[in-house]
Every structure is written in C-alpha cells, then in structure tokens.
Image 1 (tube, rainbow, N blue to C red):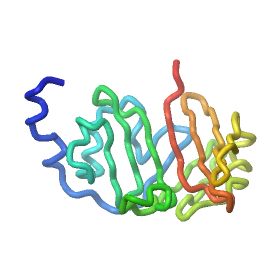
Image 2 (tube, rainbow, N blue to C red):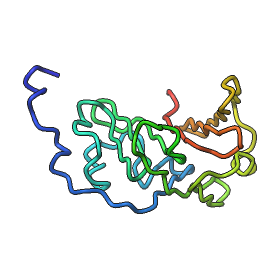
Image 3 (cartoon, rainbow, N blue to C red):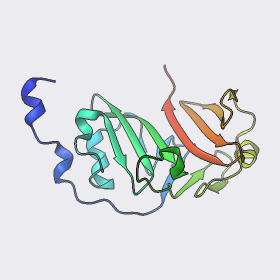
Image 4 (tube, rainbow, N blue to C red):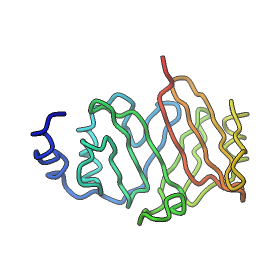
Length: 169
C-alpha cells in the first residue's frame, strides 16, 4: 500500500446501509450467509456498509448490528467471527449475532443467544481440541473438511463466539 492509498476513500464508503436479517452458517458448504473463503471482499457489499470506516485498509469488516466480523487478506475473505454474546467485546456496541447453523447431519441449530456446547457436540461429535486453560472460557475446536471452527463457550456452557477459518492446505 502506497502513501497515496492512505488518502483514497475506502470503496465501502459508497455501499448502502446493511440490513439486520438473520445469518446462516453452513458447515457443509463452509459458508456464512453464502460467502465462502476466497470470495472477493467486494461481495460483502450485499451485507451493506460495515461499521468501521476503512475496512479494506484494516483487512476487517465489522458489522456490529449483525454480530459479524469478516477478516480479509489481499481483498479476499479469510475468516469469520460470529459474536453470539455481545459481552465478548464489552467495549464495543455490538449486537448478538442472529444465526442458524446448518450441520452436516442436516440438523439446523439456532445459535442466537447461545446454545449449550453439548448440543453442538451432539451434532458434530468430539472436538479435535479442547482448551480449558482460561478459567472463564472453554474453546472447542473442530476441523471439518476445509474448515477449522472454534466454539468459544462461557463457563455456563453456552456458546458465546464462533471463529471460522480455512484449514491450511
């Protein structure tokens, strides 16, 4: 990025405001609301203008009203964060994500407001990793085909945050 790029307006500044509809996280398709890894960041226009002013420069699109954060690299989608519980980012005015998760079994879990991690495990089986070093959180990591999915759970066993990454080749 050159010095002049700093002064150029961010392309998303002209995008319309985003809607507040529910999202769909499809584990079989590896998609969030139809967006897949490697999609051009420009496709996020369908969600509308993000809340951060310069998402292309920051490599992060923050949709606070949707509880969604999309990470990009080289103008391509590289990761998703579904913030189920707004307490995950207490200093930011973020809404909890309204999202359904489509599982490989065909089951659809309403993740809105949190779902017990045991319900996730009943659908996906045992996680590849369990990190319980933090006294306040439990992280269940699943590796599903091309995806790594981390379910961050509070000690009350409710899923509060979901990170979705592409597995390295």
